[in-house]
Image: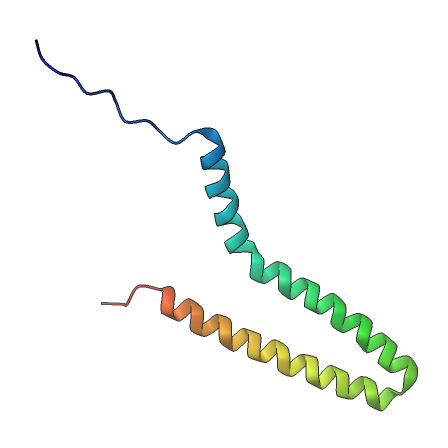
Length: 86
């Protein structure tokens, strides 16, 4: 008589769904956040432009600077995650 251990269980469908959902959210979180920030920037810009055109330029400069900072943050994050080149 030989002992045959039972085959290992594969993760059920619920766990696979959660893992896939987490991966998709990690991939899309930053672009969705940037789209949302862009829409808010347009709304604030339009409101500021209706109050005073110079105020609108100030708002535009601030949001441009914020987008620049986000771009630099993403660039550094991507460089850290990439494997080193040989």
